[in-house]
Amino acid sequence: MQRMKLNTPAGSTEIVVGEHLWSDLKSLGQEAVLLVDEHVLCQHHDIFETFRTITVPSGEQYKTLQTVESIYRELVKLEADRSTMLVGVGGGLATDVAGFVASTYLRGVPFGFISTTLLGQVDASIGGKNGVNLDGYKNMVGNFRQPSFVWCDLSLLSTLANREYVSGIAEVIKYGAIWDVQFMEYLEKHMELLLTQEIEVLEHVVSVSAAIKVDVVEKDEKESDLRRILNFGHTMGHAIERHQKVLHGEAVGMGMIMAAQLSNNLGLLPSAEVDRLQQIVSSAGLPVEMRLDPDELFLNIRKDKKKSGEFVHFVLLDGPGSTVIKPIALTELKSMIHDLC
Ligand code: GLY
Image (cartoon, rainbow, N blue to C red; front, top):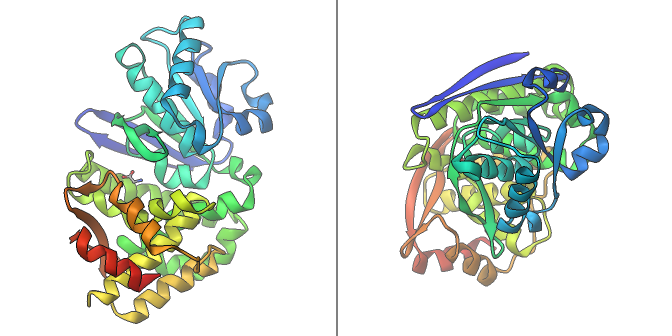
C-alpha cells in the first residue's frame, strides 16, 4: 500500500493506493452518504448495503446540472447537513459530479472519493477539479476544491470492462511523455504486465502517476501555468470525443499523437520521439489511427474552454519528458489540423 499527501493552501488530501481499501469504509461512520456510480453500485452492492447511498447515473450525458440538482434534492430528503461526509464512489465522472455537489451543497460539506477506474485513480479523482458539462461541452461549470481523501482501490479495477481499463492507460502514458522519462521506459518494459493488472506493476504505475499529478497540482492548483501541461493531448482529444464515439482515453491517446506530430511539424520534437509515443500508445491497445474530419475538429477546438481569445494554448513536447506551451492563433491552427488529418 502507498500513501501520499497533496497539500494546497486550502487544505490537504490523503491519497492511498492499494488493494481492498473499500473494507475500511466503516471507518467513515454510518452518517456518511455515498454517491455511487450506478454500475459500481450494481456490481458491488454488498459493499455498500449498510450505508446511505445515492446513485450517480453513469454516462457522459448525465454529467449535468440536472443530475447535480436531483442529488441535492436527495440529500435534503436524507437530511444531510454541514457535518455530513459525502463520498463519491466511481470513475472520473462520478467523482467530478460528487465533488461539485459536495463543494456547493450548503456552501460546502466534507468529502472524499473512492476511485474505481484507472482513469479516475491516476487523474480525475486527484487535484480538486469538480464539475459538469454544459450543452455537451466538457467541464464547463465547476470549481476547485480538494477532497479530504482519495482511495485508489486497485482490487476494484478487475471488474472494469477491458476497454475502460485500457482507456485509463492513455493518461498514464501522458505522465511519461510530459514529465518522467524513466517512467516512460518503465511503461515500455512493463506494458504487458500492466495490461494483465499484475499487482506490483499496477501499484507502481498508479502510485507514480498519482505522485506526478500531486507534484504538478501542488505547484499550480488553479491551472494558471504549470498544470496546463496535464492537458497534453486533451485539446485534440476533447475535440475528437465530441464527434467520434470513442472513450476519453482513446481520444486522448490519439490527441497525444497529434500533439506530438504538431510538435515535430513546428521543429520542436524529433520524428523518432513521435514514433516512440505512437508505439507505446499502440502497445497499450489504444487506437493510433482514426478517420477525422479536420473542419469538425477545428470547430470543436474553437469552442474549447481552454481557448483564450483568438489563441489556443497548445501543450507541445520539446523532448522526452519535456513540454512547452505555445499560444497558436486559430487562423494558423486550421491549416495545421488539415496537415495532421
Ligand atoms: N485532468 C487534468 C487536470 O486535472 O488538471
